[in-house]
Length: 171
View 1 (spheres, rainbow, N blue to C red):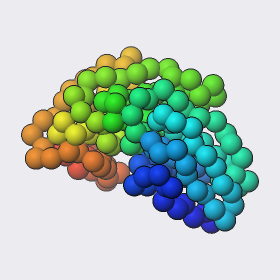
View 2 (cartoon, helix red, strand yellow):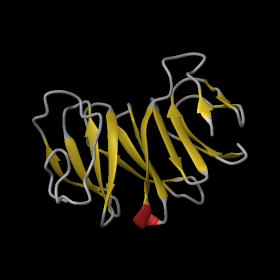
View 3 (spheres, rainbow, N blue to C red):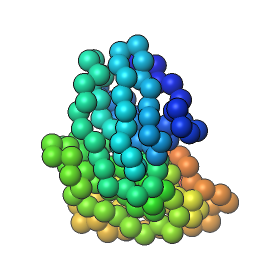
């Protein structure tokens, strides 16, 4: 088991994903303390850092956002490529092998808080602009926008038994 403490300089981690043998952390602060198995330091400015969950070895850094990384997901249909969202209003698709940016998705007018990968190389994003966008990650285009939320969209979920996400967008 790995325990993640809060940051030395800040309010704490902004995005965490534990997938198999790799831990993904995203944030803005300079330090993360990961104890029991290891300690690590995150480079600034904003990055998503990858560590091996078994031995704590550094597996690389996804660097390119200009503000806090607020969400991280894996696209299972795209070879496990990573997707990050940020307060810089962008979404970035990363090649799993090279850890280089493949595409940058822009269209939100405020911070992107939530991501949800969907079947068919599609992705939902939720933002501080009170919208949800549906993206085609293959060509990087926005396919549609749902407006009308009363506040920031900070989380997205779908049910395998339903044809609709929590915000009633047909999947």
